[in-house]
Image 1 (cartoon, rainbow, N blue to C red):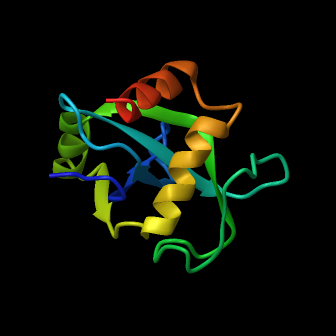
Image 2 (image 1 turned 45 degrees about the horizontal axis):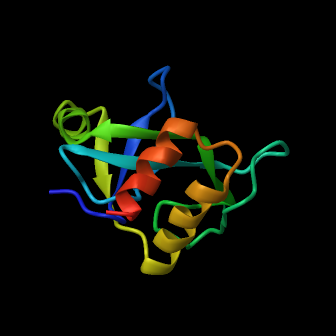
Amino acid sequence: MFKCGDTFLMEDEDGYERHLWIIVSPPTNGEMVVVCVTTQHEKSEVLVKLQKGDHPFLKWESVISYRYSKITSIDTIENAIANGMAKANAPVSEALLSRAQAGLIDSDFTPNEVRHYYKGLKTK
């Protein structure tokens, strides 16, 4: 069963590079909010910057790219892991989880439906 702070690696839409995804909400009614960690580039959003060592998967400077945040079902992630398209990874620290959650609300790039869904969870 998934919980806040758990992570998984999943291939991008083209089936190439694996990105680290962080679960930032508790699973509710079979769904959860996830955010994507990507390598930092010149035009990256830098609201939440991550350094090598902030998580065992990170080997270089990275950022949370809130534009890719989404609401996903537990079944989707479990099926991706079972089919080899995703792989469970080490959870993030409480400090990193808190930064990721705060950034989800603060980022101008978080999709509105994700932000509203997440805020709704926080008020329950």
